[in-house]
Length: 114
Image 1: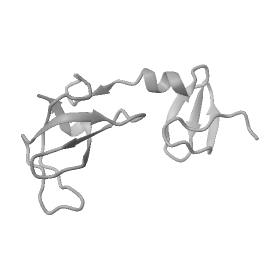
Image 2: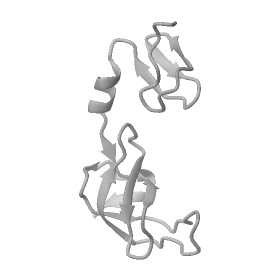
Image 3: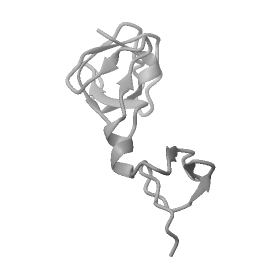
């Protein structure tokens, strides 16, 4: 068995060294060889479209109309998502609920801190 670690994001073992980093061929995630998987998750910060740091429990606003898969109701610009939850190991997505749609997973590039 190889001494190359599995990807800390997707847990797949299809990884390879590239310079000073390991690269996951499945999800494209790169992380430094010197740091372990624990430091990658701990150093992660989630930022909104304006660069503000987001924390669990924050309130965010949608900045453009978004189609929602599995629903005929779109999220309109200005929709407020209260009490968000950060996704472990993922700095590009948050979980939350709007007034009309529950169980949303949203990209932070479409959100701003309220």
